[in-house]
Image 1: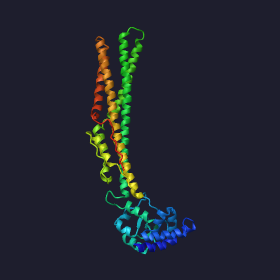
Image 2 (image 1 turned 90 degrees about the vertical axis):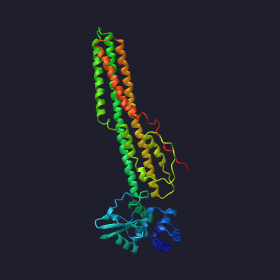
Image 3 (image 1 turned 180 degrees about the horizontal axis):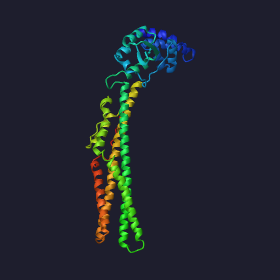
Image 4 (image 1 turned 135 degrees about the horizontal axis):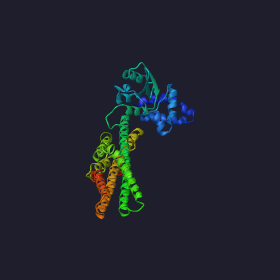
Length: 407
């Protein structure tokens, strides 16, 4: 291994003379970097990048000029054709670092740390048959990232497909949160229609009372107009509410909301791995509360690591935070249902009491029909409110929070 790096360091150091000409390195620094690379069995560009802080694009420019070929940097967004990866494995690629990055008609572009290596070219031709090859130079570290990210491996390893899967689940949770936001908007519209219904029934109650007390006054037509406008407002609010009640609000029942939320958190079983056990907290009784408790054991702990590994850790952490937002959104949706139910119960009890009070206070007559209407409307509103409210009565009043890991 040392002999190989010594031979390559001797060759590549000639190409890095351009760094001396541009004043980026001194001859002494380049010699020291070459000696250090050979002694530690590393590529010289790795030493220059880590210890002498030479910008990557300067190294790639020098290597490109030395090998007389284009250069390429690692980019996980590259659309590598899947057929180029068939039959390749990480072990064989790591022996002579190279990776197929694209295909242009019948030409396959190969990213290689040493494009001039004859053994590497023979290995490429053996493992990846093609009509023509084009070799682009890349840093050894970038090629290792290509290998880890684009080759399929066991779940839990640092591969680009894992981040793609995590991104898919984040999109899934975002879609579900958007749907729940739409449901909450529907519930807000329902409460707005309830306000129209409440105002209309209140005007009807006021007009019937005034007609009984002052039926002979010249203002009696005004009271009948008030009653008509009250019925119109009530009808407007009722139609708006029933339109929503029969369409989008009825299907997502409380249990459905919780079950779909649980389904969007399944990524934790396949993608999230914790080296140390999470905090243990007592589980609560309801399913949604248990989901919140379940997230407490999936707080990602970040350790010093290369960029690719750190991005994978951060992708996992983003998914856990997205899961917390999804559970919180489910809570908000359920509580919006409960709030809507309580509003109907409150209004229903008010009009039931008002209708019963008017029936008791005034003697039975023609106007008693309106009192009975208020009483019946109040009972229906209270019953509908109970249908909204009772299924969510047992949910916790406090959204569970994930503890912050110590150390």
